[in-house]
Amino acid sequence: MNAPGKYTIVNTKEKRIPLSGRDILLAVLSGIMLTASFPPGNLSFLAWFALVPLLKSLDNKSPSPAFRLGLITGMAHYLTLLYWIVVVLGHYGNLNIVVSFIPLILLCLYLALYSGLFSSLTTYLGGSRLDLIFMAGFWVGLEYIRSKLLTGFPWCLLGYSQYEHLYVIQIADICGVYGLSFLIIFSNGLIYWLLFMHHERRSSLLKWQVLIAVLMAGSTFAYAHYRLTGDLSGGKSRKSVNAVIIQGNIDQSVKWDPAYQEETVATYLRLTHTGLDFRPGLIVWPEAALPFFFQDNVKFSPRVLSFAVESGAPLVFGSPAYKRVSGMTRYYNRAYLLTPDDQPIKYYDKVHLVPFGEYVPLGRFLSFVNRLVPAAGDFDVGDKVAPLKHEGLSTGILICFEVIFPELARAHARKGANILVNLTNDAWFGMTSAPYQHLSMTVFRSVENRLPTIRAANTGFSAFISPRGEILKKSNLFTEAVLRGSVDTSGSALTFYARYGDLFALSLLVISLIKVFYCLWHRRGK
Image (cartoon, rainbow, N blue to C red; front, side):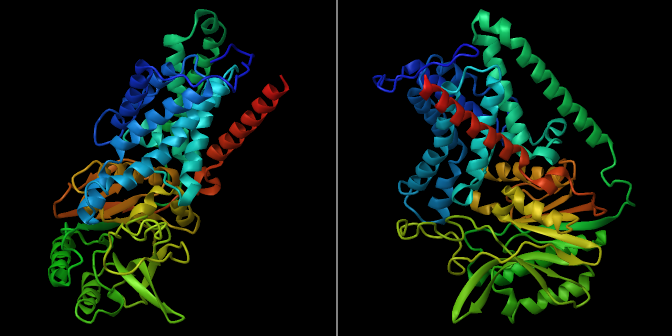
C-alpha cells in the first residue's frame, strides 16, 4: 500500500513475476480460515482476521500479482466451502465423480474472481486516509454484485459467519448482512495495520482507524442492546399462535418413487397426529412433502384435505404443480395453504429456482448434467411474491434456496406478512456442511424484517427462529421430528431494511466505483 495522500504510477509493462511460495501459502491460509469461520464449526471468530495473511502477501505487490493471490484465496475458500456440490451432483445427479467436479470448479473459479478483484483494487487504490473504509467498501460492493449477477449466488456472504452472535447481527435490520461483512473486513484491515504497517504511517493514521473502529463497535453493540431489550411490537398488543413443524425424514433416493407415496403420506399424517395435543394454530410440512401433483391426485389428496379439516389448523406444505398454457405444460415448485373451514386453496409458486436442481442453466452446453428433481420437466418461475393469508395469519413463504435472497423476504414483509415460513428439502446435501450453512443464512431474514421464521425441512434443520435471530428450537439431521413452538404474530413496523433494502451495500458500491474512476483519471493525468 502507498504512503498517505500519494499514488504510485503502476508500470503497465512490468514483467510478470512469479509468486513466491510464501505468498501462495499465505493466500491459501486466508482461504482456509475463511471457510473455517462458517458453520458447522464454532470458529466464527476467525473471520475477523482471516484475511490478514492475504493482506500480508499483498505487500508491495502491483495489481496483477495481487489479483492472482486473491484468486488463490478464493479458490482455497470456495473449494472447501462448497465441496458438497460434488456430493449432490454425484450421488443424486448420477454423475461420474470426476465429471461432478466440473460444475464445482467452474463455480468456484467464478466466485474467486471477486476475491481476486478485491485484492487488486486494494493494492491499486491504496494511498488514502480512508484506506480501510474503502477496502471494506470494495468487499461489500463486490458481494452485492455477486448477489445479483447471473441470477445471483449470495451463498455464505462473509457476514453470515456471525449468525450465532446476537449482539453483532442486530444491525441487519438496517444494513442487512452487508453491514456485518463491512465490519469484518474493516477489522481485518485494522489488525493487519497493527501488526505490519511501518512505524511512520502507524503514528499518522492508526489513531484515526482505531477511533473509527471503536465508534463502529460501540454503535453496533449499543444498537443491539436497544433491540434485544426493547419491545419489537411497537406497543401493539401481543398475539401468538401455536405452531407444529413436521420433519418427515424421507430418504431422498426413494422420495420420488411412486411406490413410496403411500408410506410418505402415512409418515406425515402419523407424525402430525402426535402434535395435535399442542392445539396448533398452524401446521407446517416441508418442501415437496407430497411428491406428487396434489392438485389432481385422487388417491392421496382427499386424505390430506380431510386431515386439514380434522386437525382444525391451517396446513402449509410443498408439492409440485403444473399449469397448461397455450398447449404447453408448465411445472412449478409450489407451497399450498389448506384451511380447516373449506376456504379456497391458496398457493405460492417459487420465483427463484435452484440451478441444476430445478433447471439446468446453459442447458445447451451442460446437457450431460441431469436435474436433481425427476418428478417433472424444468420448473418455471412463479408470477408473484405475496403472503398466504388466513384470518390473523399472513405467511410469507420462502421455498428452499429462496431464503438466501433477502429481497424476497422483504417483499413478503412489505405486503403484510407477520411470519416467514421456509420450506426446504436439505436431504440433497447429505451429511455435509451445507445444511448448517443454509440454516445460518435463514437467521438473517428474521432479523432484517423483525419477523419470526418457521423452517420446515424434509430432514434437518427444522427450526423456530425469533425476530431477534435466536434459534429457539432445532431438529437434528436425518431424524423424524415434531417441533412445537409458540410464534409471535403481532408483527412490527417495517424495519429500515424492509423499507429500503440494500441501500447500504448499494451506496458502498457507488462510492467504490467513484473511487476507481477518480484514481484512474488521477493516475492517467500523472
